Image (cartoon, rainbow over all chains, first blue to last red; front, side):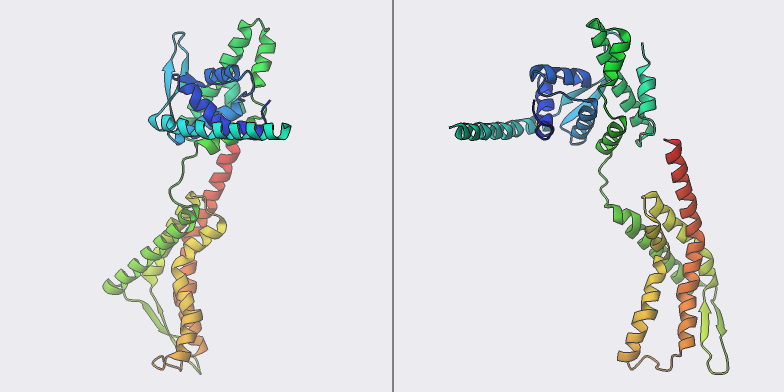
Length: 110
Length: 231
């Protein structure tokens, strides 16, 4: 299980990554992140929605209300061009960090 | 089935956002819990247990409320101190100075009186018409400062700001001028100093506060009652 501090930093990357495949509403987003990370990243409501609203303010994502086939109104979020632009350097940053940690772990094990 | 909209409305009551935003947030969070609940039901979890587990997705409603408020709060382009103090203060100063200039140019004439006694006779010059308008200017300063969330101190100084240049003159400028400048009459007596201070600082400050402080008082009461109504 990943610690809270790291999770906080990776949350933006996780949200932007799942939205890269298409628009999603909050519940579905949380479910997919949990599923794809095999439960390592699990969003509580208190973490998810404030994060989505903050990212919306930064114009990385855009939310709009949509009505599903069963008549339920849901707010779907999609990536904006600014969000797409942000995703790539964010990915590089985290890959670098994980690579560094892996190297460090290997050195300590040696 | 639980009324998720109702549950979320009561848990997040008093959310300090625009009414339209509150409706959207409540609908979104309620929708999330409902999806969670439906998903649990589809896994054959009994209704009561499903509702309990769905609600457990939020450990602390108060924290959620605060985090949503802070996340949705729009960045204010104006720093707080500017909105709470400098802007209302300079507006009251500008309005009161323009008004005084207009009165001095077009009348009515000030009330003048020689405050004579056995040893001294300074002349009091009081612009009564100016003083009569100052409560309105004070009220405007107090309203602007309070609306921007100014503290009692910020509101007070926003109201009396137009008198501060005169106060500075009487307390600092005049004594320095008496020492350094030969052209300033050196026979200014202490009573004359107090007459001037009253006419240009104490009376205007009182007039400004007479209009501004009640506005501050009522605005604070309204704020307290709206907060307690919001929970």
